[in-house]
Image 1 (cartoon, one colour):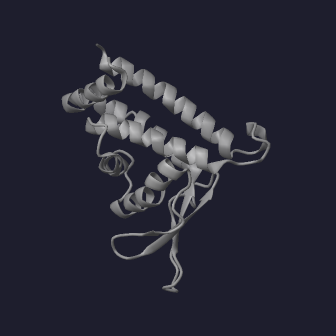
Image 2 (cartoon, helix red, strand yellow; image 1 turned 90 degrees about the vertical axis):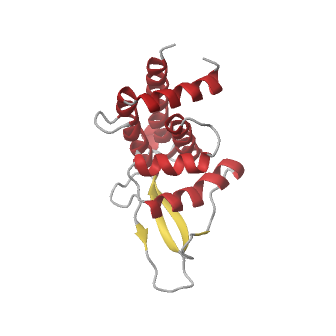
Image 3 (cartoon, helix red, strand yellow; image 1 turned 135 degrees about the vertical axis):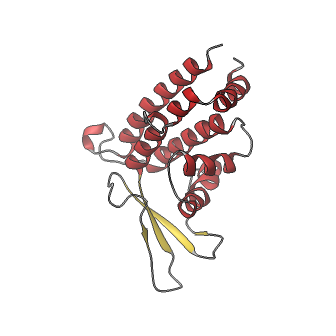
Length: 185
């Protein structure tokens, strides 16, 4: 079985679909959504894609929170605090209740909320700190830029998942385990 070929095809299809669907959900009137954005389905698809490729990367479908944190730090290059906040705010509640947490208290006791913009690289993943201890810090997320970050983490020719997969026997073993579990191949 050519696991590299199968993984490349899954990656091609998922990356194209992710960018197209996120653009449709949060794009402008020209994207087909008539200017009525639907950010939660876009975010859900982003996190589902990270979840899938994190499973490939780690070689297991279980322990998805740790898989996702490893993927976000090692392949997307996000720092630990940002990774904890993204997973804490979005992963569990979004996946299980279709709505992210409104507030998240991190391990340091800091309270965060979130806000999104459809496409704004400058604001993407910035934290608006508040001096009032009663007010939560705001994590800004640009949904289109987040989708692009995910695609780059997979496709980047120098440091992306597919590049590493082609060179690393352990990653190849990991993906073969997950493909067998998911698809029976």
